[in-house]
Amino acid sequence: MSYNVTLNGPGPWGFRLQGGKDFNMPLTISRITPGSKAAQSHMNQGDLVVAIDGVNTDGMTHLEAQNKIKSASYNLSLTLQKYVEITPARAPVHSYTPGKADPSCRPPWVTDDSFSQKFAPGKTTTSVTKHTLPRGAPAPSPASTSVYSSPSIPSSSQTPAVARGTIQRAERFPASNRTPLCGHCNSIIRGPFLVAMGRSWHPEEFNCAYCKTSLADVCFVEEQNNVYCERCYEQFFAPTCARCHTKIMGEVMHALRQTWHTTCFVCAACKKPFGNSLFHMEDGEPYCEKDYIALFSTKCHGCDFPVEAGDKFIEALGHTWHDTCFICAVCHVNLEGQPFYSKKDKPLCKKHAHAINV
Image (cartoon, rainbow, N blue to C red; front, top):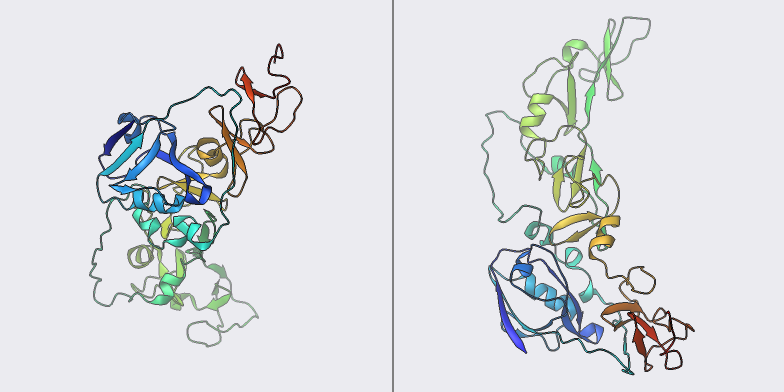
């Protein structure tokens, strides 16, 4: 029996799909997040997805269905078919092997350059703000943005890169027989001098490139081959954290095409910073490896390990199994494609169908 559901946007919608043409099985609802929009609409786990926004799902691959759902501008309309559970008894079990992976089946956050902007945490719209710099302010250049760039990560999980915007401080040295050259005027220094960025300086010539404040005894940041006091660096160069929206002084985390404080880019579940660890995206939120597997991966009912992309698996008795894990609970003979019975939610071969205390 089919029924229609309309979810009011914007996303996330709060449900996961499984199946598709490339998996040789129909698209079904595999998980519903408690308290989500999907849960409030009375959708049921296991229901078949017949149509998405009026488009029939027959022939849709898993990725095509995901992209169709993500492209919903505001409301998402689904036509679903109720899942009817039939108690198996000598019912054949079919195994499903996902189709060979090709570039079109790669995750959207890998293939779609705008994915991170569309589904960034807490971000619903994209806006551009024009700032007018004071007269004489240092002009932005490609060199300044390259400081925070990081290579793309071609996988469903990503490794955030820690960029440089390091706060430094010059070290004072008294006059001595040593006569270094000044990094500013290239003249010999015959009195006390400063050492910073691997070079020596006259104390009176080591100043902020914009406000000319002496940096002899205060912290500074190097940018575009110049040095700036913290205040000028923060005003003209420091990136803004995508989470707390304050300027980032010091280490910068670059991930999802945005910049973050290292303490602000955290797992949506355990709230621990990622550091240099891998993370996975789900409903626009980043998750650490451990929480992603615990919350979202499909686990084999036999071994309790995840069923990963490319694994051969079986859907039976309301659970998912690796093809090698779907075995008789007594004699351990493999039941893939074979008639089977069940007792206490465990599969049995015909011989042991009436075994006691399974």
